[in-house]
Length: 323
Figure 1 (cartoon, helix red, strand yellow):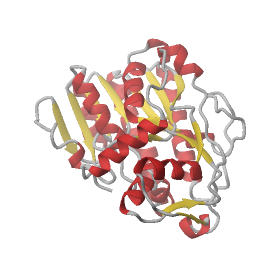
Figure 2: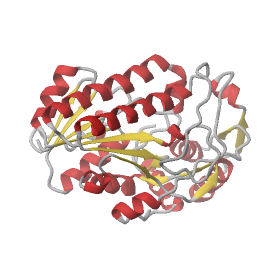
Figure 3: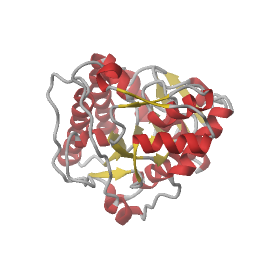
């Protein structure tokens, strides 16, 4: 196998596996299927060009064996989604920090290039918009559970950069901003597939908070192509790089856009944060990436706008993708 993808049965991971296979790579996947699905890879798992191992990246001996067999490693295995982070904080921290340490140790042992998918959550409650990679991060109190994810991913970044500094291990760190597309589930709080599923069923579209918080959504196809290019870009090594789209929309505006594209009569209902997530939930008003760095490195420009993203999610849901 030429490439290892941890978390390869997840939403982004499975799209990455397909892109790598299309480029002629052979792919080895480690995924414990806790939030991923075998269905995402079922048509690819032939035991030859793609092989799936169902296990955890916290299994150090297995990870060591797998890394030894490949030429490069994409590390996507992680807890995902706001709801999972709120409900299972121990699992969140252990799976992120322990898993990344396990994979980095093996990559350092065998000198394998390593790409880490981090998150825009690392920017925390920063108010400078758009978010640039060298901006200060502003975290909430440790008593607020949602910040465990941001802090764990920030520690991942520190650890990867430490390996770059001390051992010159080729590492690339990407911060993803709200990646969306076909086969994404709304099960763990991802807003676009959740809104689309509600609209297609005719259920109320549930907007948390006042709906004026804004986000930017990137198509998974654009993101995956950027991941492939950055892994092979020498200038990206030792760097933290935003990947996303800078087309900003409020969450209420997103709900209206979903209604329009689906032709749904669903009402839009606002639910207080404390009702959705419990007391003490923090949210950010805006989350917009500065994309100048990735544009300079690989000429990145998002090719698909929000309407295309929503249409692709609608088509996927209508074809029976799980929710």
